[in-house]
Image (cartoon, rainbow, N blue to C red; front, side, top):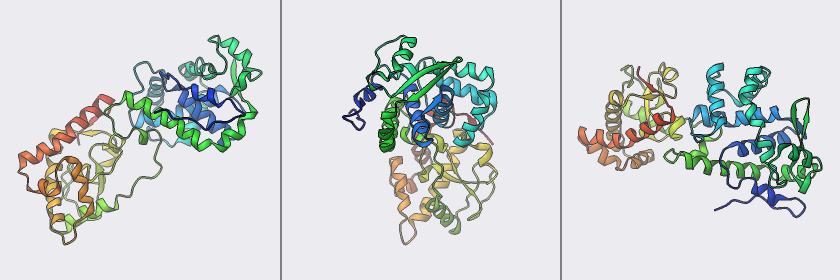
Length: 358
């Protein structure tokens, strides 16, 4: 199914739709998202290409560095972002406004400009090709001056820098349809990346940073109840005995991979652990048996409560009912958890997630 943008009788919106036909890289999506932000959210009508490129890097930062999505073997933007992060020791979970401010400083350095220069060599010109059918960049600049065929913007070179100026007839359309156009770009980006990450869950949830995460209230209640009913819950990693209300809930497989808060992937942990474990993968041989056994004990307690906790339904995605898991012998219990956690861990390793031991 192909998603269409809102059409206009006054504008050449049919060409804007065609921009994303036969897309072989993420550049056009991130270019479009960036110029939408700058044109609509910041109210700019003219900007140099480096402003747009900074926003492209910022938009792609979390999918690359935090969620470790693959962009494909030939994607230079992916490699450039990994290099930027590594060589400049930028935190992978940096806030996007802070990242943009930092990038504005970094692009003043010649070596950083050299790393990112490829972004201005193709996409500003290729994006206009549905309106202006030429593969010659100089001709594209020249013909865009009159906004040929009602193209979205025109290009201009001044003192070696490429400038982008919005065609004023598009401004109202972009403002009125900003949310739809942004969703359109993310929809296309989701489909593109799903094809390159076929075994990765929740691609659409990994395109932007979630500013607020769930407080995990129901999950904490589940573990507090188990502790209050006499289950001895120890940190998987430090073996520290934990007490109700004085622990962190750890995503055993990092949230940045699973993008969910299902109960079977959550385990109380010593508060000192979360920062060092971060988004790394725990050693399954060492820690998975402890996780499975702790969950089984907590499930037994919860099943014995007068009112069944709805959150127990999370365990159904392991392929068994909570009662079945509670009744398993150790061999079948470990097999139940291993069948889910082993393939997830292997996929995450293939994506570049690191392993961790306490």
